[in-house]
Image 1 (cartoon, rainbow, N blue to C red):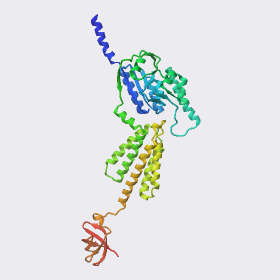
Image 2 (image 1 turned 90 degrees about the vertical axis):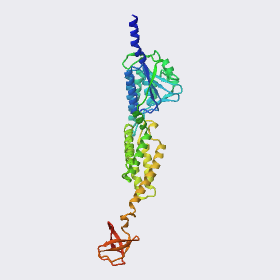
Image 3 (image 1 turned 180 degrees about the horizontal axis):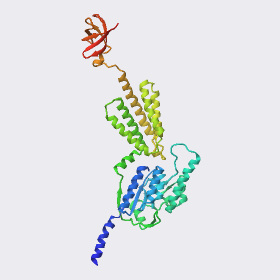
Image 4 (image 1 turned 30 degrees about the vertical axis):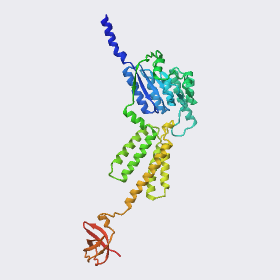
Length: 421
């Protein structure tokens, strides 16, 4: 009997040791890369049969489509999800409020806030009816989440319709969250033994206190793409890539600027494809470079150059129309990038045009157009004195000795000349 009990105990040890808490850090805007990262984390927790998933959240908000996708993954997760707004000073604003309310257990650290979830219209100007439709849609989405999780539906909806924000204490008092905890261990201790109702109607008791915490980090690819999702970086890559390609076109064969430029523009376009991009703004950026080229060619005393810089600044500001300021190109970035690139582009184009206009003054081609003296009779061959050197020359007509001649061509080491006044 003892052997049987010992075997059962040994058999159960791996499963007891295997239980852990998977922790996801989301300290960024909510966008498709955030959606992919959280989705992978939830799948990993389900495969490992973790006791719970904790999403430590600090976000100014993000895209509604990505938010809906994340909420769907959280609501249907096989592992209970705890969203914890942390550390002190963090916020779960706008789209982050939806994630907080969608969790099985919602918690905030002291000194944090949440709310301000009114939908923001992207891009084009819309009428009042369309605005009302979008607001009603977001409000209905919030009512669904709040009622499913047993939270205060009316107060949660007011964060959408009236952009109300709440401190951690206000959120707790108005039943928007379940716990206020200063750190993760105290949070896990506070929710130990809590029964939560899952999306399928089943009830699960949380056993999370004292469990090992397993951090789940972004992959290298996700970190890179998340960085590219910053509109300021996407714009900077596009501008520098265009400048590099411009330099390659003016200096064919350099290769490196062309390769770097193509890579930078492709990375920029990848990010812009995932962001709410106004493609008319891309046309403004292209028009800026056209004006820079025209300024160098026609020398309008800065009129076209200034116009190009203005086009680039407005193109940058309108390039990404995100729902929050953090998902738009900042004015400082637009100015710091546009003015130097405009000056550099005009300078490079001016050098290239001057080089093409200047007559060659070295080598055999530099002899063309030079004036010399016939030292012998040219009938049609003879000798001419050009550039301090005696040359073999041939003329199409007879030229008398001592006549001034102009070099019209070079054939090997023989000059082709014609008489000149």
